[in-house]
Length: 72
Image 1 (cartoon, one colour):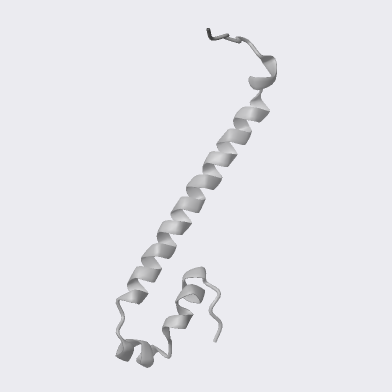
Image 2 (cartoon, helix red, strand yellow):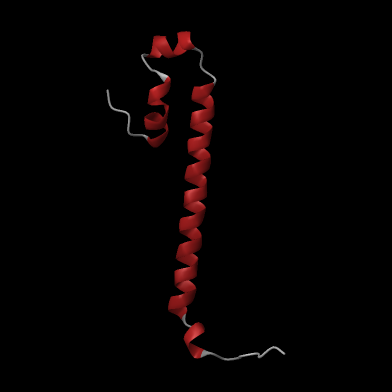
């Protein structure tokens, strides 16, 4: 037997709806950043040793490049 609760005023507030919208936007931004980071890592992974040497990079630099925190 299920009990149906209708009209709970605390769950029908603009603040709660705004909070869910913000949470959804944050999740979508996180997904987009994760996709971008995966694309960068995939592109770097395609480089061979000679290309990496020409660029002055090593495979240890890949995470820093994807994060945008590589400093030279």
